[in-house]
Length: 253
Ligand code: PGA
View: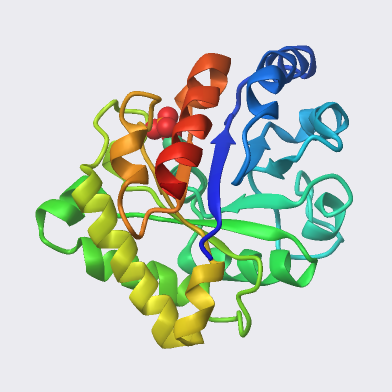
């Protein structure tokens, strides 16, 4: 059976107090929803506070990045082993990490492998830029990103993949549900070829990029879209609850 999932990427927003406030506003709405894995990804400093507030509620917590080494002289970095004590998920290879902080396909691959090894669930992000789509190279770019990000991963148990076209992130210009479906179906084929047919139902495939409570139903209706990775709309309690509720209703329907 497919695992449905909605993850909120708060990015560099919310102090610890603001994070607590948002969780307190979210919880009444999220509590009644079944059948969707719900993940909140606050900044590092708020992971523990958010984790305490959602304890035993069925809502999970995720970090937004990590480093692949377990420990050592890597000033400013946090390892999967450290995160595994505070949260279950970690976003890896987000396009902002790639474009602003210079992450490469190879470094994303090391992070995915290290996260899985530490028993965490990486939400591995891939997606093409606008000029790459316009040049007809979107599938080739995503092929390369998926292949290199999984190079060191023999068993993908726990993996989540998010297709986030860069041009759709934070722009209000979401991909069409058909574009999301077609790329995620393509990614499912890549994963099947690499790991075997049966394994891909255990890997939630998410769409991300300007998802809102208004447009999410169109994505959730697609056969290869198992949910969403949400940025901006995850900072507003009503919008995020609406997105999760819609994925629960439409995705299971
Ligand atoms: P957005 O961000 O929903 O604000 O477009 C998505 C993301 O970056 O994960």
